[in-house]
Image (tube, rainbow, N blue to C red; front, side, top):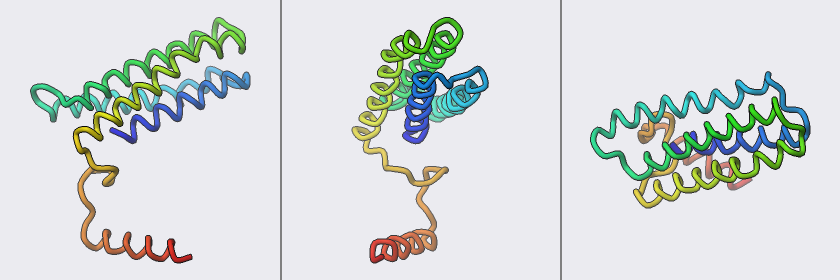
Length: 143
């Protein structure tokens, strides 16, 4: 969940930067919509696993997905209808809403005691991989 939130914030910022630089085009849209599609798929699966009442972090994630969708819509609309300066101003609030929603997801996960990144499956690594990771950490810190 954190990874999806981080990716959406990073891509939203990149989109806003491209608008600011006057380099955002229709060809840039798939880069913004792909994280949205993946986040929506993740949310559907997470709701299925949650069963009844979803945890606070998932409700916050739903808000983030909705705000990211609104940002993408605002970005596309501003690309078609406004010049660079007006588009930049129009995107400030939707971008801030995405950033705030991502911070709320992170805070909810922290309150729930959710672990940091454990890998794609969110399960602990095998003992062999953990031992290798420890050796790599020691090696990289000693150089």
